[in-house]
Length: 115
Image (cartoon, rainbow, N blue to C red; front, side, top):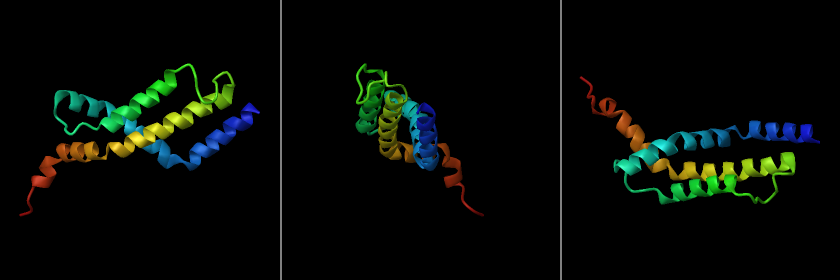
């Protein structure tokens, strides 16, 4: 049964590569965004992204879940799905920061005028 569940999860993740990429992108941008917000470099503060990240972390550390973790594979899948969904939503709320960050990284390219 556990082998079948693992295979099912792997197959499901393989078909949802776009979601896994968005989760990775959210995690990769969240810490630099937090640093820029705390230093005052980036405004307005994306409170929704911070709130969703707190929810994701709280769900991981809380002793109670929708499906208890003692049900070995199913309890872990529950955590992965809910936290993954929350991090996917975090990525939605980081679009303003992403535009600001990438515009900041390439000012020389945009200010270069053709001869």
